[in-house]
Image (cartoon, rainbow, N blue to C red; front, side, top):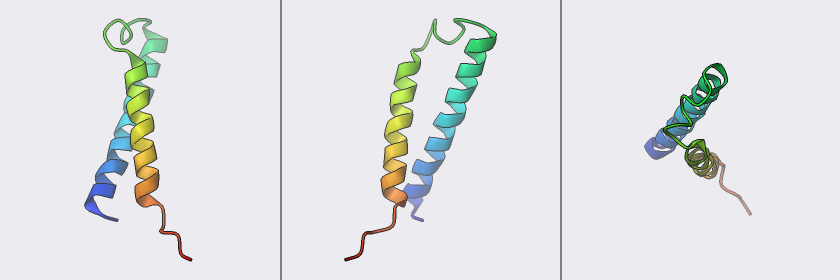
Length: 63
């Protein structure tokens, strides 16, 4: 795995953990995160990094 692929994969793991922590905090204390940060931006970043991670780590197609 290349160094870029590893960084992208670690970013995906980081955004996944951050999203989980933010959701748990919102369940425990309502409006503690949503009052200051829109989770939609984090979900969009998480989705984009996930797609990049999938395309970087996929094996090449042979003919």
